[in-house]
Amino acid sequence: MPLKILIIGAGVCGPALATMLRRSDPEHNITVVERYPGIRHNGLQIDLRAWGVPLMERLGLLDEASKRCVHENGVTLVDSKGRKHGGFGVNKSHTGQQSFTSEFEIMRGDLVEVLYEASLKDPKTGVSGEAEDEEAPGIRYKFSTWPTALTQDEKGVDVTLSDGTTKRYDMVVGADGQWSRTRRMIFGEEEGLKMFKRLNVYAAYYTIPREPEDDDVARFYHMGKGRGVALRCGDRPETQVYLMARTSSKEVQQAVERQPVERQKAIFEKLFQGDGWQMERFMKGLRESTDFYADSLGQVKAPHIVKGRVALLGDAACCASPVSGMGTTVSLIGSWVLAGELARHKGDVRTALEAYDVNVRPYITAAQKLPPGIPWFMTVDSDWAVFLVRLLFSFFSLIKLDKILFAILPEDKGGIKIPEYPETNM
Image (cartoon, rainbow, N blue to C red; front, side, top):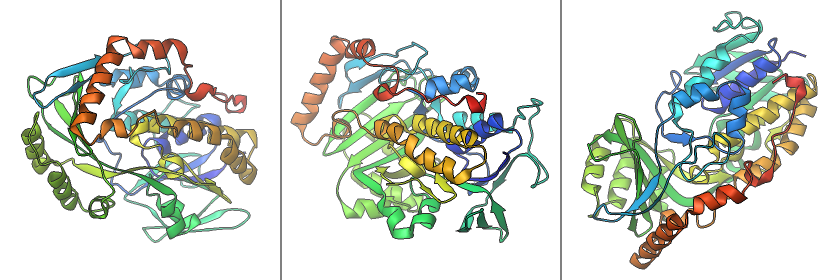
């Protein structure tokens, strides 16, 4: 049964869910609202692994995503002089089982664009475009628009938007990030914020001009005192810089979380003052950057990700944190389960959402299980700990630990298979 659906957020999982819903039932009426003025074409480097790879293949989008992938050939640790300590390459298996560097490294904006373009394509005609009639089947995107109020009853959800209009939908999906406004609206401001569990790690990302010595191997530098720096560029014209700081400081938390960029820049420059490697270059780049982004790292632990006819998806529901390497993948598997349950229950929204809440849980639990030593491994404190990490990393690369893990671990995270939903015809 066709549904009138509102999706809040046009990041990765908003367009992913829209694509799956349209292919499952082309008669769905889907509106996607996004606070930003358009599809974001910038953003950090993300990857596909575990369930994400076969799901993109099922959607017929893996080849297109592969064309846009960053060709990064591995990762190494460096010391204050830039000397390398060990290294791991890329596992080019074309499956969900990936090494520390994924075969499917891709810039966030590129993946969003692939999914956005797929969502615009009519499954019946193959023609791309948005539906002009808001009451007609198809999809439409509304940028610079967000919900200001949600009121639901047994039969639908009334949504007031930032443009002052109020519209009624059969269901609403909040795919609006780790600080999800949707989550705070349905569970309450305080309760919605409490669901975000901090790792006491703060990260910043920006790009700087590429230099000749910036090659296709990612580099990670342990500065000590809970700080880590990564440099990545692959085959791209610019070099990406990642700063990570582990601290319980309230000053840092208050200067980073949902704060203006200039205040965030100031606290990161204060945290990362020091000699070694290329820190002078990185701090100069930080001051001059126009694409700087920073936030607190953590995980969203929500007892339920559904309330009535409103569901949460992706980071809004179950942020696994960037250090898990599973954020993109859990967004895709969540979209798959949600679209599948809606198709299976044939328009019975409340039953479908209750089933989604239960059946997606094992994937969330597996995705949020951080690898041993993370995030400590990336943000060690003492000089002795830095030495030990480099020694272990060199030893593990010498014995080719990544190859050993590839041989013994299942392709799917935790050995959990992708659920089948023949009702979706995907």
